[in-house]
Amino acid sequence: MTSQAVALYVHIPYCLAKCPYCDFNSYAARVWPEDAYADALLAELAHATREGVFPRGTATSIFFGGGTPSLFAPRTIARLLERAARELTLADDVEITLEANPGTVDEERLAGFVAAGVNRLSFGIQSFRPELLLALGRRHSVEDSVRALGAARAAGVRNLSLDLIYAVPGESLDDCAADLERAIEIAPEHVSAYNLTYEKGTALYRELQEGRVDPAPEELEVAMFHLVRDRLADHGYAQYEISNYAQHGREARHNQAYWRGTPYLGLGAGAHSFVPRDASDDATSYGTRWDTLRDPNRYMEAIRATGCAVASREELTRTQAMGEACWLGLRERRGVDLDRFAARFGTPLRDAFPHVGQLLADGLVEWREPHLRLTTQGLLVADSVFASFQ
Image 1 (tube, rainbow, N blue to C red):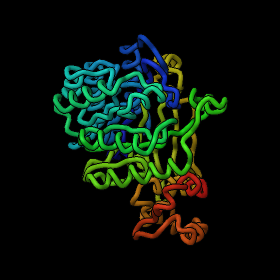
Image 2: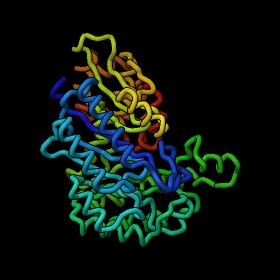
Image 3: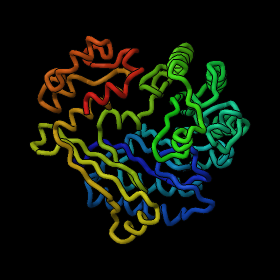
């Protein structure tokens, strides 16, 4: 496995505040142990590459996620990338993404990230409407977003992504259209547009349960989904995944690794890793996945003690792996690669999941050889389709 391709994820869990809709492993903090946490990340990377399952892999993508990675200084990001280049082989065209919140950056800081090696920035804009930012509990302003996006271009960033959230309580279809128009004017290379979800354990979910927030009606959510899809397509952004749109060649390579079931290594508190296997490996497991301790302090303590902070590990059965290959593959608009499925599991997808015939009859999926993909109708009930493979 010495030459395997790997997507490297680096989790930085600290935020200035916890957004009410966020269910990621993040922690509000006024100060954070930046150097100590970076030390732990580097020790974990060394353990994974020298003693673990990723010896001298080739990193095709590196993604700094959070939390708010842009809170860390450019020198820290540079330090992490320098070590990654020593512990792993970096692909010549490696995609290096850093998530950023608009209120935490300026041109000088962004130029520092670019100098460190970051070549893709992903901004959590969420909306260009002040009242919607307030409803989402965001700390930045519309002006912060505009300044940050302009500063990114001035700093030399040529691969820019921005996140939008729609179906926010109180949002109208016209509001959604206005957000799209503002995003299109800025002309990022990539747009992620998410339907607001109410995840258990979040402050927003509690407000929903207590009747203190009114979710958008389902018919409005559907109208917004179609509006997002059509408006972005009209301006050259192809939908390549349920919530992701890109100009040609600007699809997020890192996320594609997750959807396509290729190896990924996660570093940091609560990060996840995965190594797939197939029938040719002559193994009972069809993949191994593990996650690390979620609490940053416990994570750092474990790394200092052993170089490893694994919280749980799971070996995938063939049935599990087949199901995941389907529902993850169906997230992409191209769908599940039928030839790859058959090669990995030694059986055609239709034989492994006979219920596909009913999904076809119901108009939820379609054959687009050599792929099985969701139809437009299937996109609207994607979670139900995914559940049928679990």
